[in-house]
Image (cartoon, rainbow, N blue to C red; front, side, top):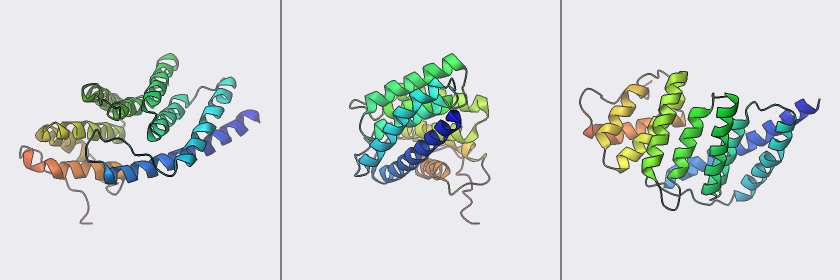
Length: 220
């Protein structure tokens, strides 16, 4: 009974925090001018702090039950939320702890996303580190590919393509994304595919003819 009740509380916290992060990222995408743009503080910070408090309080109890399942996922959410509130360094520490847990427990289903999150946070530091971020995005994409997680591979590749675009490597960015994007036959209205499609359109002129922009399905 205690285990089930705690799980319900954790899921409520996750839903609230996930909703906040998604809304925050959507608003950020409208104002971010480059891959290294800092996430702005929003008026909803009080809501984020409430979600963070729930996650921080819930995780120790979750561990106390002996159930470590999903802990890397919860830590990943906590890291992103900290970064949204400006605590990027703390977010990086949390991601590092989550990756340590993956190593300890072998629960690797969220590993690709953790590397993607770490790369994203490295670009939000006061002194962004695009080289280290690129390594994390590459690792994330490779891990997702090994796991057959096509959407997470595309997501990581999209972040990497943004870095390359900012460095003037537009042709490489397009050639990276085009074959991954072309694997999808549906879901073109989702944020991940829309983000990839936008970069493909922006970088099309710099790409070799062998990788034209795939059909986005918008004519349906």
